[in-house]
Figure 1: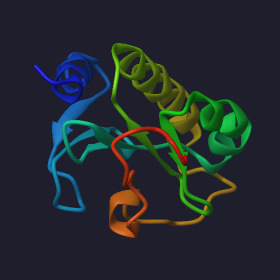
Figure 2: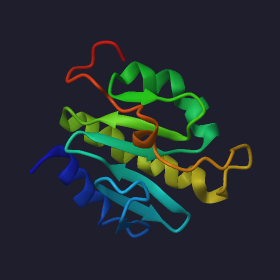
Figure 3: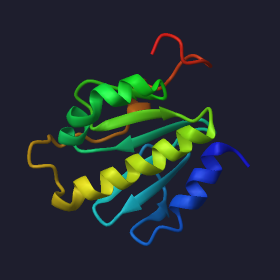
Length: 131
């Protein structure tokens, strides 16, 4: 079982989430009542939709993790699942996203459709150097 499939299986058991077809057409997705929240694009690359406020609040810590890539102007962050701890980080961030989305849509946000995969902003290297 890959790290992505393990994370997807865990998220599918959460009562506020359900598996869905991703709007970008690649991989698998997870939706909440407020819309798409996670896209699994490969066995390692995952896009997670946070609110603009959450991205700004956690940007420094997310960048320091080495597993997260932030794309300026996008409410989606891209996670690279290389270790079990990255799955734990993803699950924590999904929880943060669900809490932040209680006031969905983000009152400060812009209507931004499409995940980072559509922006060509995914990870391009197999290791974490250069992030």
